[in-house]
Image 1 (cartoon, rainbow, N blue to C red):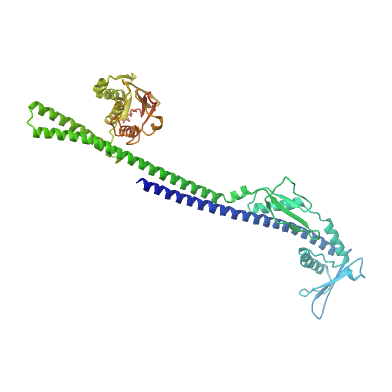
Image 2: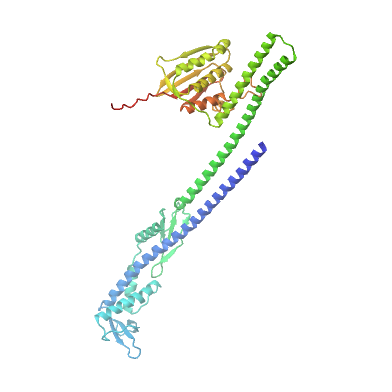
Length: 502
């Protein structure tokens, strides 16, 4: 049996450790995946922020270019329709350098044909919008500066020089892009003209992004401190479910182990109980058998026969008492115990219990002091079972007394409860055993021999009865200094009958 239990515990331990190991492994893999996603997100966010900044720069240059083309003091725009190809040809010429070849450029739009075939304000606006939104923006996106005319090229170069890096705007764009990806951790943007301080250590960094229209381009990199908080927030449900599963697994394992050990201990106690009960049953049966054989085989006198019959009657009573105890324990285990509560005086129950044990108390030379209040204390209880509880406590005081028994009993009402205390001057109960004495079949160990007869059922019975009455029982004890049992039961409350109208 012990080997099987050990094997079961070992197998359960291995299975639990494997389950927890797999759980932690997948959680770690989830952490690595979240870390990779975080790195990808911070790079994508910076790319998006740079693109937004470049779009604003392109819009600024495009608006400038449209203004330059619309300014008649800077350029002249003319058009004509090629009769052969049907293409509308636009010519842009610098106002100041009309004789220079670099001051003129020509471009044709095949699908567009003016109504009059000549340059008008409407045709000029069409050309400016289409040329800037296609050719100029395409050049800006490709970071190519084309001098369509000398004047326009110089203006473009001057615009590039005047355009400054707006770090605050880029920082705001990056923050918005991070929030859109549910990243709220702190970060720093560093540009090509800046350097990290020696005291700053950042384990996470994006790649370096270039932006601008002319070399040298602006360069920006984002640095992050340890983003574990962000990663944990991203994985909060995965981690929480893993922790809950791990906790449930550990609790189930611990509960199962405790249950197995408790059942093992209970089985050992039951075996001890059966052994003790077997010896107890064997004695009266053997005595009855010997007495019966003597009466049958020998010609006994009337007085001798009466003496043997008395022995048989006494041992039969003892045997009946043992059987009643076994049946009572069986009824407890099957929850078949029925209580018949009614108002009972605590003082009267204590006096009955003392009266039942008066012969044993007198033989032992015990002294009893019952400290009772003048007012009657009533509880709603089953008189028979509550009397059995008190009798068990007095019997234990007699069994485990040290020298002459001095028993002190007191009762009083407090906070709606009847408090009953029974104190003896016995051998006491070790501190380590005090929580176990109410367990079924448990007896304070004293080696392989119990000098005092018992089966470990009395206090278990007492606890069950008191709790069935919605009460509690506790003890205070020190070795060789006696024990105090305290019982608390709800006071009986009178029910007022409802008045019925005449």
